[in-house]
Length: 114
Image 1: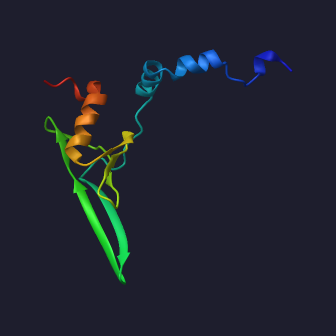
Image 2: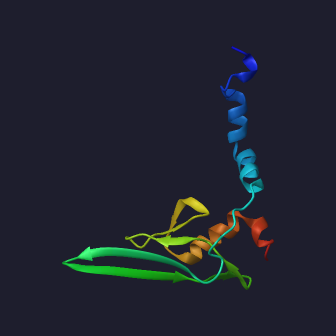
């Protein structure tokens, strides 16, 4: 077998690539996919059945930061906890907390602030 065609990942290179700074830089450099739903407020719909009744709850988020619309992709689960597509490992009790964490984690996107 030709050693240059070996698909095995070098553990040292993998460890270096997984360092938060290196991996974060890699993710930040990826092109942002086009968003097909950039217009209008974001909606999260929850449904349930209870004693023969179908319940549907639509929560609508229209978020701006510094007067600019923010498409944060917020969803509410059945327990009322918020999740955000940009922060998949987090859960929030309020949309304001979610936006604060987005600003903290993506300062370049928000242009500093102050």
